[in-house]
Length: 65
Image (tube, rainbow, N blue to C red; front, top):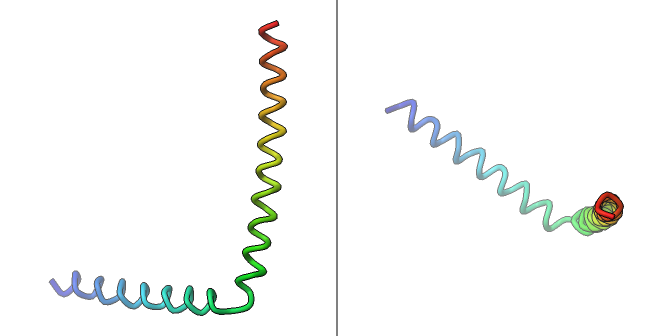
């Protein structure tokens, strides 16, 4: 029983610490910088997948022809 309650207390403390860290980060100026970096990386990844899709479609079309 004591083991279970100590796990609950530790979980609560860790959850509260994560919540405070996320709240602090979301209210900081770094948030905008991170969002821009993530958008840029997402666009790069999208372009990469688009090129691979086109390459795969061309290869499949050549194989079926």
